[in-house]
Length: 259
Image (cartoon, one colour):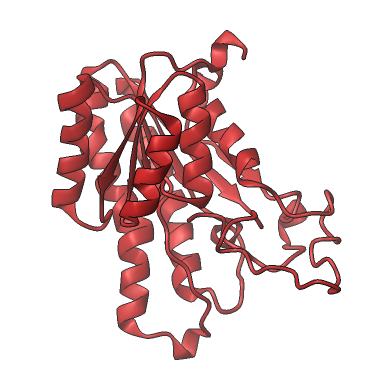
């Protein structure tokens, strides 16, 4: 691995890290030398992942919509390692419901996890990062946060909002050496992606790259943004969607990649 991508001695929090995209992020950042704090509500899967990664991984049960939980996660990192360098705001929930059938409670719950959660996370880690001389915050949005998809009122609103939050955070935190960037995955092969049934046409054939993506392909971009290879990059938005939003139009059904 090129030295610019090494994360030796750095400490990362990865929310929603027990499975899918978050687990791929945890594995890759750990392989690059980071200590990873994996957080999720899925305790059994999270503990299993940390055992797989080894002594450089710690699991914490964490509801990202709760301020007290954020305090506990950050305290875990600081008590154990004395520093905090990377936050990957990956946790997210999704469902598809027509706008006029969506309930207020479900809309608010989606915003609480997908938007308020990252907001609380950015606030929680900024102090330790500032004290340590800087850091990298990586927000996982979605192509549904850059185009209008039918049935995605709550999810789309949360992911559009996350982009705006990241831009503001990048502006305000840049003077402290804290970089804030956003990744917008398209159809990524996790539990949130609608599978293609055997014998059915490939719904992704119309994409420029002609296929869905894999979690490791998003994780590679997470590693880039976490590392010194991107030390002059902040406020950026990187699409990992196989070309789905070329010219601003979607070329395949939205399939959120976070898990």
